[in-house]
Image 1 (cartoon, rainbow, N blue to C red):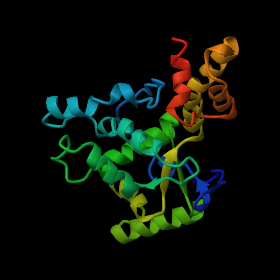
Image 2 (cartoon, rainbow, N blue to C red; image 1 turned 135 degrees about the vertical axis):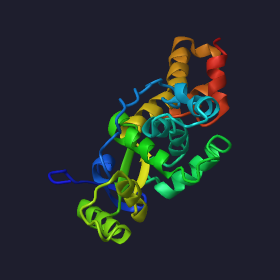
Image 3 (cartoon, helix red, strand yellow; image 1 turned 180 degrees about the vertical axis):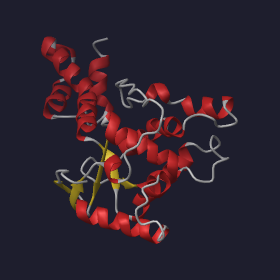
Length: 239
């Protein structure tokens, strides 16, 4: 963490510090090539991977696939959960995400008692490779480092210099570390939500007599997403 710049941000819950999740809690991504970011657009850029976990569970009963790849396939489900959180919130901690992933993957990974390693690799992918997830904490970087080392000493007091994956994979469970969608993704989703409104405005300007004065007032008073389905009917009226 030496030389890492500390970024401070204000969330609903108070002051937070952004940090590099993979660098703080182990930066190795395994021996296999990282998964390619689908960048599919739409409400969830990981949508093309939605069935990967189900196919893997059905066709690879020995579970020989790379742990980091299987964990990466959790991204579509993690994105679903984070997308529903307030934009200015710190988000969910890892325990909350693990609970949500157990529900999302129920019946697929029942042979695993612990989905924590999968979620860990998913978060590394989203934070460090794809840029879709942002990690923050009310602790600053030095406090995070101290808390991580306290966890490692407590878990393996005879190996204080150990940096094994198992230790680091679990170290962040001891801290206040939270995850939400990155500013890039939030901005992309805002644009996506505004698209029907922008289209409707252009259609009304082109043919103002096609809709009522009240519908026009509602449409041009909004700056972001429509307040009701009535505005979507403005677009449909031109089709």
